[in-house]
Image (cartoon, rainbow, N blue to C red; front, side, top):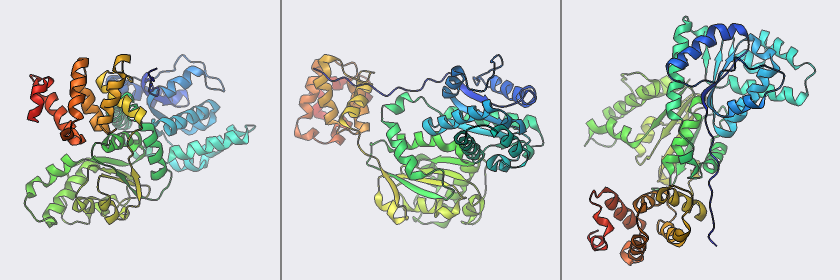
Length: 450
């Protein structure tokens, strides 16, 4: 009997933003302006105007929190006076930890340190709310407030124009929504297992800076994993940037042919890097500027597909270049680069299990997670020829999509021959077939040309 495979359930997002707040004054003034700005930018926001509030969260509200991509928590002095709001915050922080929900705090007329340590007038209000509450619940509330205050957010006292702050928050949220992608494509790669392992290695709760390597062979899914990690955690940092090989190539193009450690090339590369992470064009004149500008910034930096030690030394010479709590992630297939840079925290990306490999293949070959009954043996053998390598599974599955059973059999017979024993040859064959507009690769007589 054929074995069936199913994918893990993906989250269904009904809202882009869930706002958490306390008080009619906040609703009528700041929040109404913010929601109007969201509406103008077509950002779908949960609105609870007609909901009756009680001491416990209603199931509909918990579902709304869970099904929102971003939670914007507007903290005023009165926020801590509400058991409802504090329980709401617990639900939001759980979603952040379990699903990577983006959380953006807005400190409205409030010092973030008072939230972090529950001090000042905010602390007094909080203590009054905690009266007659279970000790375990009070501990949970304190932990949630402290974690929230450690997230990069917006402080109204730093703005002389509330309208500008509202506009900036809406622009920031809009940008984050562009980064958040459907989990459907991620789940098929077993992304949650990778996220759990990397979360332990990165230890986001630690205030110490850390460099981490993501290591693996070509096609194993390193960039897919890195992108998902960046999308989920970039909101926790003051500045974040994802540097790929294309960025490095463009930045170094004008110095093609220069010696590997040309000083001007190094300056130019750092200049482009700083401009990218700080969001404005810069001109620098010495190589110590990266450390000077970023040593007080909590940053998240991804250096993807890195094969050049010079680039790593130039952009992230040491973790001391960056502020407390910074994370630098280097994605490479070269363990030597990581060792040479003193990076000991390394996540080696494993190949997917046989069951997951078949799911990846079937998602691309049949647009579902399992093969039709009469294709089970053919699909299993095809996935085996891809060596469980995600890139091979995707390319081979895409090539075979919509083909007749006889074509599958002819192709597998060809793959059993010695010249197609390596995954590189199979990938070459499939790439050529996918790129051939006339699809001549369907015919066995064309295969000998490869």
